[in-house]
Amino acid sequence: MTAIEKLQQLIDESKRIVAFTGAGVSTESGIKDFRSEDGLYNEEYDFPPEIILSHSFFMQNPIEFFRFYQNKMLCKGVLPNGAHKKFAELEQAGKLTAVITQNIDGLHQLAGSKTVLELHGSVLRNYCMRCGEFYPVEKMEGPGIPYCDCGGMIKPDVVLYEESLDGDTIEQSIDHLRKADLVIVGGTSLTVYPAAGLLNYTHGKIVLINRGETHINSSAELVITDPIGKTMEQIIVR
Image (cartoon, rainbow, N blue to C red):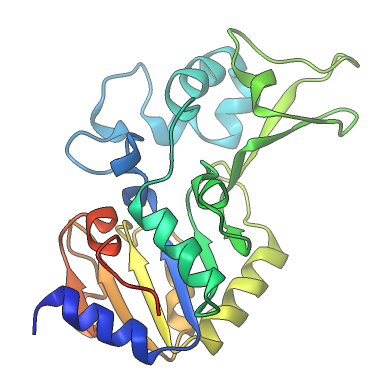
């Protein structure tokens, strides 16, 4: 039995699937991840990305923050790939209960997924730090620091380093993982906590689709190292 045939069998036998996705799911759409050989962490900047994308750096050096953010985090015209579309199809068929994602690009929703739990927020939502007014992503495209009509600085609704994840999103994610009979983990190195630790709550089978090795490889029911978009688009939803 091939890996695709095994994946098809596991999906066919499951009734409560959860997708747990990371940056590698969006690389086939043209968005760079962070930790691969050609990822953002291996590009040259005056500061490492994990420093630039921290709360303290954002507050102390917003000009440099937004220069990086507007150049590297906003991806106009990017479209969902086969993985995003197949997860949406599985949800529409009543087989997938939720997508839990570390991504902030909104591609799962663009593909048609309805129940998407964004652990790290979204670039599509932005708010004034003074009055709370919300703004669409177009307001953030720059150049320069985006300001509200009231004069307050507008912050992306993304979780920066040094910031806490949203408690309600965490609780909902844990609930879905506990009830899942199959968790498809895709495109994540599982090195970013607390997000990666959420998989400890699942009691169902785990399929891992990722280019690199993770700490759950040995415990996964199935491991596939091919691109997740190419893999998932071969699945038939029935």
